[in-house]
Image: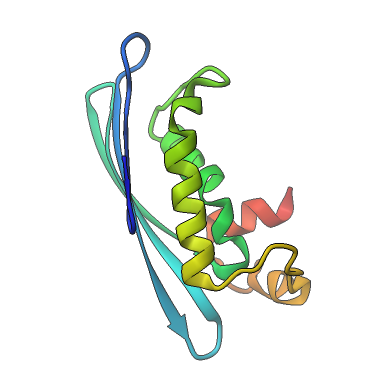
Length: 133
């Protein structure tokens, strides 16, 4: 279920049980531009967890990959295609982020800014792992 600023997803039926809440908000930094703060909490197989991460504007639309990495770190193991039931909610969140961040289709990425975010700014481990691969 999606509401602007919050995505909730829970397991349906068989397989590993999970209940996840992904909340997000935007912030502006004078030196580093616009960022999105994410707060992921919930439970996986009955074990609660809570983790925060942030992504720069240029990587914010890749939120699903970043959130799945965090959830996997806490034990989420899903077969390929399992999350397809979230497609409509994912699309709504993606559109909300694009609208809030004023990202236009086809807008080029500032590769220099992405390069500037790596090792010198280790506060964004998720962004670093995306940039490196």
